[in-house]
Length: 244
Length: 319
Image 1 (spheres, rainbow over the protein chains, first blue to last red):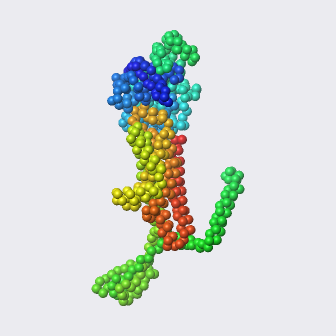
Image 2 (image 1 turned 180 degrees about the horizontal axis):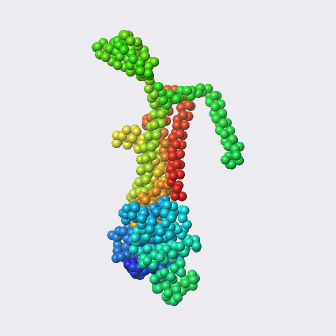
Image 3 (image 1 turned 30 degrees about the vertical axis):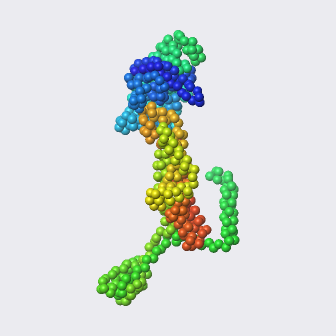
């Protein structure tokens, strides 16, 4: 479903060249839950942002459902409709109520009717467990509630893939559980997911496959069982020793 | 209430200082032998205008009928034609069967008319309102161009902003009126409004740019990740939030614009300032009129800031 071929992304700044993503090749199948882990600055977030075109690719290719993101003729807005994204900082729209946050893109991008969009929004809010907050403004919600709204907002577009960029990193510890629970439920329903996270427990329990990145390179990949119990690479062993 | 009880003596001091300043001004003016004639001022807001009705030809009064406030006078002129005049009761100068010569006064009609100060206030309000709206549109477009990916758009907007912000408004008004006014054949009112709009636009552009840049990057990314294109994200996500943040500086800009509009009086537009100058030439009540003019500007600007404060409170629901 998502084919990445020799993806490279370099940043130029203050006379320095940073190879954030340095030649990644991998294939993510439909319905698969892939967790990307690695030390900070290893390029995992950048890789994720490349997957929905928030970063321009320096070279290489990403095919989502056969559509090449590196092709200049590709309409990125069409691609992004099919790829939902959840951010570390939630990025809810503060001037809109929770319901409006979910309805807006449906009506503007998917051209759905207001009523239809609101129905879908309410169903999704119920699913993530905050149906009673639909008229509140995001600022009045806790971090965990905001992140669940953000997940519902992405789901409202009926994406084929969901990308999660450290969804629990900005949360108070007691709110991490409620967000992970929603993500687990999504995984059980067969959603294709790419998750960048530091939650090793989640990776172990939910992931079909773990990608370990360091310095922009894909160092090791495998099933969680294999990765957490019997890593092959020294860098991965060192990382696991530090985080577990 | 509690704080009021605690610091009443400071409030008293404020009042005392104002009284002392006022007394000082009063003493100073009495030293220069100035006669204050405040009673002359109100007639320049509104006045009772008298229109005198006269017989056009030699005639004879046939009939006088009074209906409350108005009186109807019927006369037959030398060509044997019947004429009817309606005048205010009490101003009647003729009686039935009287012979009139051409030009004789029959009576008069009184009407309340707007005086020059109120007219000038209206002109100032009109010029400021129109220039604010056009300035806002110019500023919005320029502000967006300033942040555009295209280099030409960016450079053109920077050149425009720098030229306008780097030259005096008075000079701009002269250039627009004498140069563009002559070349493009536009009248003084249009020239005045154009100069003020272009001036305000440059400042509004910078305010809008700052407002847009103050919105976190994540908002644009979230909008784009939902499949919105840049214009959609701008209209639905970025601009509404930026508008809320730019409201206080925009209000300041529009209040400045009301005050700056007094400069168009130099190209002979009869705004509040020019009206004040004209009234002074006929009354010599220099001090009174300038104080009144200042007070009228103050009224306009305070009303505007109250309105904006109200809008701000309305928009604060999502904070």
